[in-house]
Length: 110
Image (cartoon, rainbow, N blue to C red):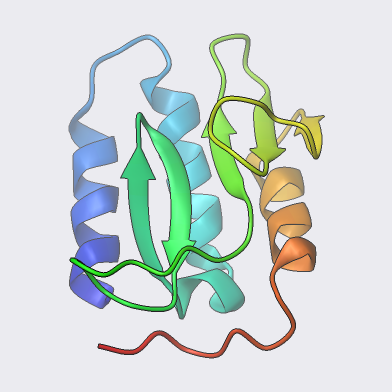
């Protein structure tokens, strides 16, 4: 799990796309939150998700986080629509994602 977090953080730090700084700040905000750091992170089309299991049998839990081209950060039930909210900071988006987690998903398992 920790190696996947480190991979995501390194990957985000090396991106040169215009939206890369926002994406990088989202990854760092999620990593700073213990409730999310205890889950297995993965991305789908640059949207950040979490799982209670590792690959190849992911068990997604909670909402999806996105860093949008307009500088906002989205939280949604899927990576296509930020239907749970748009926020000005990644910390606000992460806070909602933590609140939307299933009660006690627990740490991830193999």
